[in-house]
Amino acid sequence: MSHTGKRVHRAATTQSWWIGCLLVLVACSGKSDPHKGAEQSVSQLVGAEGATLESSDGAVRLVIPQGALGQQTRITVAPATNYTEVDGLLPGTVYTFGPDGTVFADPVEISIHYDPERMPRGIAASSLQLRRAVGNAWKEMPGSRVDEATERVTGTTTSFSTYGLIGTPTASRAADAGPEQSTDGQTGGHDAREVSPDASNVQAGDASDSRECIPGTRKWCDGTTYCGWGIATCGEDGRWPLVERAGQWIERCIEDGSGLRPDTPCACRYYFFNSECCERPDCVIPANTNGQVCQPSAGGYCDPCSLETPECTAGRLCAVFQQLNAKQERTFESFCTGMSCEGPHDCDEGQACVRISTRLNSTQRRCVPEGGSCQE
Figure 1: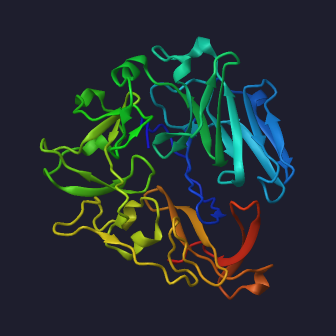
Figure 2 (figure 1 turned 90 degrees about the vertical axis):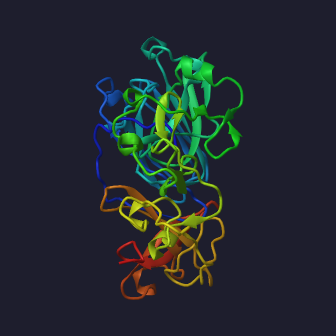
Figure 3 (figure 1 turned 60 degrees about the vertical axis):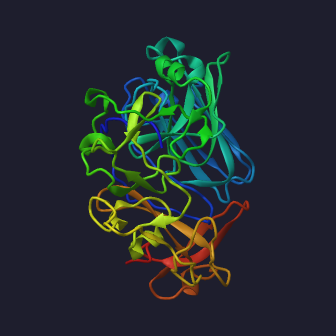
């Protein structure tokens, strides 16, 4: 993930949703912007036929292709009321798309207009990117592109959340000219460099607030690239290492593809990082342990499942459920659903019949726990 910053306010929510396997979801929150008004809000019923929604002032546009929605849904677009402030964020370009957590079978296109006269100092229009709020960070959306002639930035997504436009400071871009090295060691498009910043340059509220550690100590962390289970290693200077992403310092958390997670039953139920599943409250990995690689799922009802290899059997689906943990962090539990259903009468006691969206242009009903979690 990228672009951490000061948390201004966070609006807790209990809203949840179900999705079929292979759908990677994240969620967000935001901050009020005085430059937005009712003329930039949109509300419209959209069904399987798709639609193009645009605010009356043309500031934001949403294109939903035919077949992306499996049922009629009231789609809303409004200026974000809560979000994380970071350097490079353009005033008046942050919007919340709803219903929060709506998942599409095919990508939808988001296009946001920017005002060149309101560009932050040191930000070039060519550096603007459509980014999605993910906790305290802003994640770049694939295929984000700038059209300086129309003064718009466009990108695609398969699920709703809060989105905004963020530019890269000129100094940071010049320092990282050429192919950049991302935090997982692969050459990529992120401008990242690992150094030891002066404490005055570190944003309050990010992972660096408590950076002191014992050299060589490892801890579980929220992966910098995919938000999955990653590992940070304490440096020789007795501090957790940081990387710079577009002028912001974030903790360096590496996802190495090994599938390692904390050695707890909870960890195998969460594809994405969940601090409550660590062996210790501070997520430091206990000495002489390396975590675990979760065993293949039996594929039965409520058995854990993997997003890469969903092993659910007998017509069950691998579903992902979003919820807030006790720390008010968004978490994503994945498990095998029950059997196909048409209504509550088809499910066992303690189960509900819910609609699950898939990438196959369809929705399917399956029995799931009424409480939305197999751990209750």
